Amino acid sequence: MANDIEVALVAPCYLAGPGDPAWITVPLHRACGWTTTEEPLTRRVVRTSPDRQAELRVDPTPDDQWWHLHHAADADHPAWYASFGARTPVELIAAVLDALTDPVTPQATACDPLEPVRQAGWAWSPGARISPDGIAEIEHFTDHGSNSWFITAALSDDPENSLWQACFGGNTPDYLITAFTRTLADPSPLIRDPLSLPPRARRHTHLRTEQLPAGTVAFALEHRTAALAQRRAPSPATSTAPPAPPQEPRPRRAR
Image 1 (cartoon, rainbow, N blue to C red):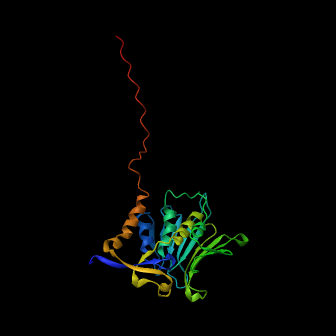
Image 2 (image 1 turned 90 degrees about the vertical axis):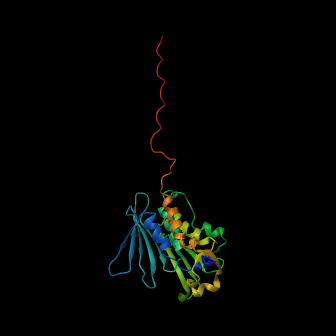
Image 3 (image 1 turned 120 degrees about the vertical axis):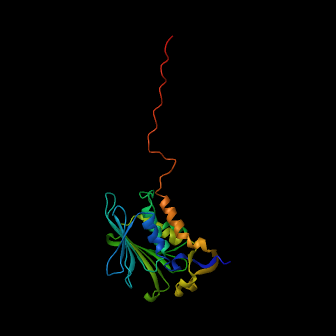
């Protein structure tokens, strides 16, 4: 049909390629109120949360992590950081930021970042969980007081075949790492432009093309942004005013 466009549905998600950075940056600004600062004479862009506690820095440096998330210490938690390689699928990074900016995220709830991949059948190797195809790996380092997490996708041990890496520092809250691993283990395919798929990863993916209405693709980001903004909208049925006290009956005049 004239109003349909062809898209690629790619699984597993870690082989889909980076996708559109706007999937992350637009909702942060429009739905979560993060401000944007561009550093002169560089390609570096910094986005800062309304409370000035969190900062997302996008630094397109060759052969280095491009996305850097830092959070200052507060009364309940020490400072922490996370970083993501340039080719990390934006949906994985967005899962972390969506959890971070969710006003009702149960931060105190105990969770195990490895549970989603364990449930998805990822294999156990000493110190790591490995995807069924052997391409993605989660390593958790706890030696000598360390508590760092490294999630990588690589087609072989050759550094040239590395696709991306995500790093979570030791103080990163578990619920944020779990948001990442839950999306990582999700078998649902990601939508991509057929012409933008990583050439080296194509033969390892479950790939099919599909015709979708142009409006569905064009407004996906708008719908995502609106849904995230709705999280902060007050419920129309909720009233902050205390209930009025019951009226005492007026005394009747004696006859």
